[in-house]
Amino acid sequence: MKKVFVMMLFISCFLMAASASADVIGNARLSLIQGDVSVRTADSGNEWIAASINLPLTPGDKVWVPEEGRAEIQILGGTYLRADAGTDLEITKLNMESDAAVTQIALPQGRIYVKYRNFGVGNSVFQIDTPIVSAMAYGSAVFEVNVDENGYTEVSVIDGFVYVESGYGNTKVSAGDMLSIGPDGYADISPRRPRDEWLSWNTSRDALLARSVSSSRYLPPALGVYSGDFDEYGRWVNTSDYGYVWTPRLVAKTWAPYRSGRWVWMNGDYVWISYEPWGWAPYHYGRWAFSAGIGWCWVPPAINAVFWSPGFVAWINTPTYISWVPLAPGEIYYGYGYYGPHSVNLRTVNIKTINVRNVYINSRVAHGVTVIHRDTFLTGRPVRNVNAPANPFSSGARVSPGRPDVKPVRETIMPHPTKVIPPGSLPAMRIIDRAKTTGITNRPVAVHEKSSVFRAGTSAPPMRVNKSAYPKPATKIHKAETDRPQTRKGDIDKPAVRSGEGSVAPSVKRKEIPGPETKKGVIESPGIKTKEPVRPSVKQKEAGNSTLQKGVTGKPALTPKATEESRRSREKEVKNSPLQSRSKQPAIINQQRSGRGRETENLQTPQGAGIPESNK
Image (tube, rainbow, N blue to C red; front, side):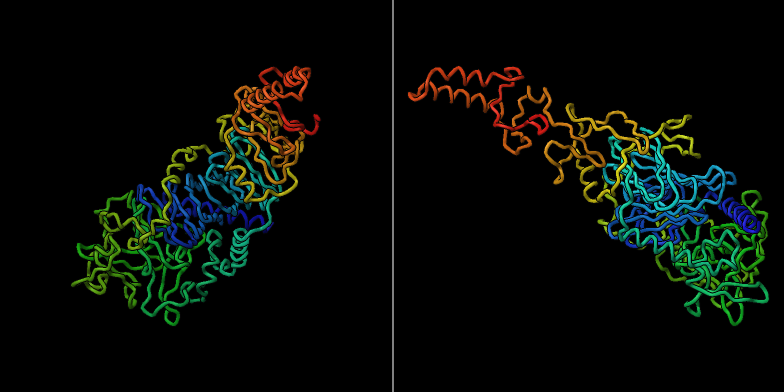
């Protein structure tokens, strides 16, 4: 009973935190980046800009992970998505409502690892859309999705289960299995491959985050997922004024909150992007205080006051400089939206009638107030302040209600405006064009197991798949699928068998890729072995294929043209040879014209060539 109560408390706090995120800005962030990861946001337009840790991600934002790079996205509620090198993804939907929690990701190409955490909110789903399929997790699950440049998709489930739907139907992939499907709709289910370096790195990250729970005892339940940051980079101290507070380690004596980072214009507001690895929860939730003997410390919000904000500060805006100070517990925050207790929504009041007090507790702390030139605020380039007071909040300057009334410029949308991404680390045009043409960003969401992505208003039929007993080799399968020629008339149909049923799927014509394991007279495809003889089609025979064809014996068969020339040459030799009896000449011609075929199939084939072993 106690566990049920705790879970219900967590769900209510989670939903409260979700509803508090204005315009879903606070629902996801880049929690880890390696290499020159770049993003393209609604504010940056078509320009790819350098990513930063703690950058909020919203629907429509794209992330590109170059070679030698990796990225981790943390989603509200404890879900993690990690992207490997060569991954192009876009956040399509990110809705955390009281009756549904929907996350939708478009993956034109690349490899991602998802650790999805569902807390029982109705109509919740985590959906990954690739050029060929959509993969949906409705309950907590751990899975991988791998998409190559041709759209060939693999969905590998580590824990839980995932539903996968294509244009041919829907199937359930359980833990330990992997679904592979190509552009032709031919699907296989096989055991997952052995762990590689990428999977080992992900499981290590998961284990590290799972162990980092010490701080959760001091945090409201909705913020418990950030315990790892608090555990690794600071300590908790009990104070008489605020109870347990958190203070960061390894900061300079002149350090102050909201100092190491930048205000970035996004979604119509200035949002604080911290360069500190722990700088997400302490700058977007709760307030800051200064305590003698401890220094700066973060005061977590109450359970009923977990509200994300662009940054809890007070502003002073002048024509030459901009200044801010961290808000202490109980001080009023003026913002464009509702940010919980002790906040004023400027969208519902007349801003000209607001008289903001200019006495803030933290403005009295040495180095507590930040003052920068207006141009530095906009462009990120350092500009020296001239005649600016060291502490405008103590000099009587008027406090601005809400964010600075400063029109953003191109650099204002960049978390790292001075960082230049090497051209080789930017996505190629073919990748950008492919993402545009796949149309996967327009797919609907299958909000429950019986709904369909590709058949609106109806449920998807069962997908018919071939069941393989062995894992697919990664390199061999990718080569076989990506280099597969287009299907032509005369190719052999390969029926797929649905796992556990033995029903046959609609014929899908596949051109088989011969490999070293192919035997005489046996066509081998992933998961299927059939002893169907290989016969050239009538159309191919009539067309007179100019290339040499090999039979199962490995001996070359002559083409019709070569055979006719050989026949005439032999007839001539027989006529002119004194040693050859004329009585044998008709026998030679008749031998050439005999057989089951027509005269146009008059092939003088070496013995055994082109004849399957089963027909000899």
